[in-house]
Image 1 (cartoon, each protein chain N blue to C red):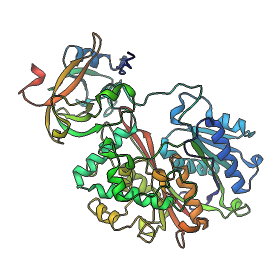
Image 2 (image 1 turned 45 degrees about the vertical axis):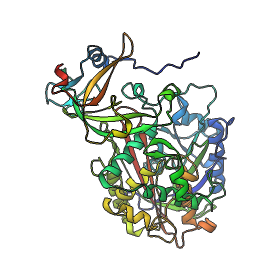
Image 3 (image 1 turned 180 degrees about the vertical axis):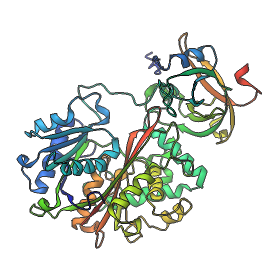
Image 4 (image 1 turned 60 degrees about the vertical axis):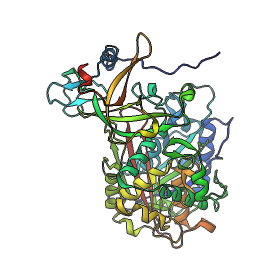
Amino acid sequence: MVFSGKYSIVGVGCSRFGKIQGVSTMGFTLEAAKRALEDAGLGRDEVDGVLVLMPAVMGEQHGWASRVASFLGIEPTFCATMDLGGATACAMAQTAAAAIEAGYCRTVLCCFATQNWPQGVELRLFGSEFQVPYGDVGAMTFMAHLKRRQQYEWGYPDEVYGTIAVTWRRHAQQNPEAQMRKPMSLEDYFASRWVVEPLRLFDCCPNTDGGGAFVVTSTERGRDLAKPPVRILGAGQSHSSEIIRPAGASDSHWGGKKAAEQVYRSAGVGPTDLSFAQIYDAFTPRVVHDVVAYGFCAPHEVADFVLEGNLDFGGRLPSNTAGGLLSEGHLSGFGHVREAVRQLRGECGPRQVPNAELGLVTGYGGAPHEAPPTVSYSALVLAR
Amino acid sequence: MFVLEKPLPRPTEDSAPYWEAARREELRLQKCQDCGHVRFPPSLLCPRCLSERAEWVRTSGRGTVYSFIVVHRPQHPAFQPDAPYNVAIVELEEGPRLHTNLVEVENSEIEIGMPVEVVFEKVNDEVTLPKFRPRRTENPGER
């Protein structure tokens, strides 16, 4: 038991998000930060820690976190820019709790934003000298290899991936903020064009401009704030530096499995205790990977597990209840943290999981598009 | 007509021997002189034992297809005229896996496990890209 619920997420917020040009990355960050503080009922003078995720498409932005703090008029005693891509949100909650435990600060604002059409900065091309010359550019190619290996090793039919996308889209229809709300059927999934075969368009999340934020402080302090604190019961992460091994089904470093062992051990719970999960899903094969890594079922059971509706409301583990990255939008996992907190507070209206007590959030990111591809896994168990 | 050029490697101290060998139509990788591990991508240290002692050994040029994908929507516009094109990961006999393109084969005919051998595609006087085709010679590395 590392923190055992001693620290909590006490406020969550997102900026406007979707396809929004003409707003700066900083603008989105500040908007999200302010909403998270308002949600918590905290003044900025009560924040003494600031953590910010480095936006991937910005190029070099030195001192990003302290600049965010400066624009908020905060002079923190603990400040750091983090860079684990989509694994950052969960890892950031863990870092925030650790910093408070260490006595560096008492209340940490965690935030992030991205603008896919940045002004005044040079866009970098993702990928290395050993990949880009072959037209192997971006995260999608790596994820296409992941799907290829999963299907090769375990024979998962395309219906599994389609069902994940369709289920999330249905959830998004109960989320007025979701970026992709148009109804989608399995037929629509199969009719969607190849992007990078075997990935179809609907295996991929949309690009999203916008930001998210949350606030971490002690659970004791959280009890006096605007909303009930949501306890960080456990956290886990693991990082792989394996060289060109797209995490297949059996041939895989199973980084997520290590993070899973750590998050469950520190929380003192197991996968069958969970009320819901928010699974990092920039691409559908990511979900398939985590369903196995986080112990929902064995690799050979994935197809049945998904096709029987176990990730849907009423199933064994309702997941990505706001629509996930695939339909709510890609907020690098901050959307997942926000949705988990809202579920545990019982704020989700028509998409509320009944009696939600314990939720898993997973994160995934890093540089799968650089040589060697490196990936980071992170996870939180949050409790009412 | 405006032609968008494809990005080419800009070798570093670490990678220059790899690209120099490719120019001579040799596929060479670093081999640790302490633990014998053959590694890729090139680096100062052996990731297995942290030794700095390495030699550039010529590989067999033989491998098998570990994975392959077909890019329909390239993330870089210079590759658009080639789409749909394949990107494969080839597992060399020596162990390391390389991202590459498979040539002299239809995309629909590619299979995981397919034996392949290296061929060299000269782009200009500086750059030659190692690519792979279905295996047809006994010792492609010795040609």
